[in-house]
Image 1: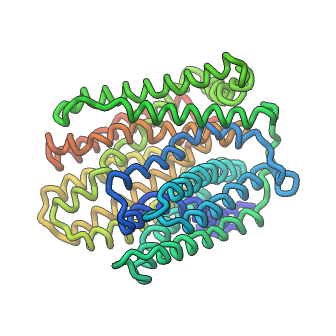
Image 2 (image 1 turned 180 degrees about the vertical axis):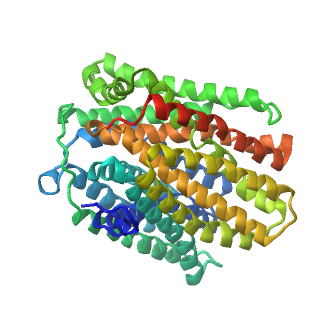
Image 3 (image 1 turned 90 degrees about the horizontal axis):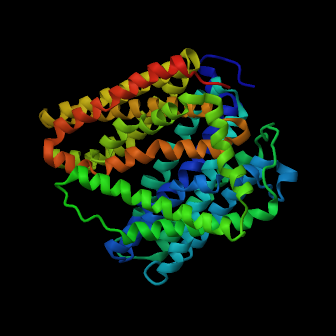
Length: 491
């Protein structure tokens, strides 16, 4: 039981278990993206084809669609392990199986099978994320979520370092000058074996004692799964068919058109679902129970302030996300060596983020969620001003280290504080569904805007751009102050 309010709290059993589960969550993501890209390029796959593999990331973006099934559907293993543990074990085992399947493919010869394997890795990994978030929220009261989220972030970052830099180091050691499929098979086999950390942690963890209300009949789960897979396919298809006709110079119009294109895609996905409801393949009542009830539960709890809270969720990470997209490009154009960027940004930056996560979680525990949320937003926006300073300062490794360290600490602090806030908003009746929805809203607008960061830099230069991103954080600070007074977290 977590009791202490000092540094020893990070060494409690629940805290350490969350560290290992965070590792399990962070391990697959780079094996789906950056590490995979290096493998594909090494195998001689064309650049355009390599970028198509990024579509696997839609599994993380659309995880809200199947999160209600994770919340409500019981697996056969649930009788022995419990609802959350059975789903978590299932997702982790699927990650291992999918990684092994991927390792047995050769993208230079069987690219389709590699794509299938990676898609299952992404889908299973996104499902695991849903479960770990729900497991964390249901395992401890809201006041201890800062500690658990800090340990989760630490494990997640260590895993990313392992599956990113670690896997590439292993591949380089085994030899990548000439493409050898055996090299990458060993890499992916080794990474899959590390998932045992998460599997063993799950087995020896205690199932959260939460009473669940059954919202749908189990016979409907396969039908729902089929319908929403078709809806996702429709979304992706329409998004690719509609191209943006505006030039890079027309940033505002291009952004508005992109927003309209995404809206059309959501309308198409909704139309597909509505069609299956109309023909009686799935029922409106069950659809409402799965997707509408979690939303109405939130709106009833916070009333007229629900929209404002959702707006805060959508804007909280805007300052650092919009800036972060061009950070590596800025380092290169500033004149820093790629090895320096890798060392200080990718390696030491990970540990700075972990430190920031610990500070954010501990601050939330000692001083409260809203104060931690405010301080996180403040330092995240303020750190962007350091980038503005670096843009006009002479080239200096010391300056680079200062800026990267400050940015990663502030990002880790803000991330931990925000996870605590989202956890407090989430109802235990709809844990997985609501948190998946919040996390999707969290990155949607910032990621959409971030896609046009390069165009803004072309117009105003780096210094002014970084200053602008810092200013974007001011409305967020005002919203936090107001919401903390009129709509505090209701447990």
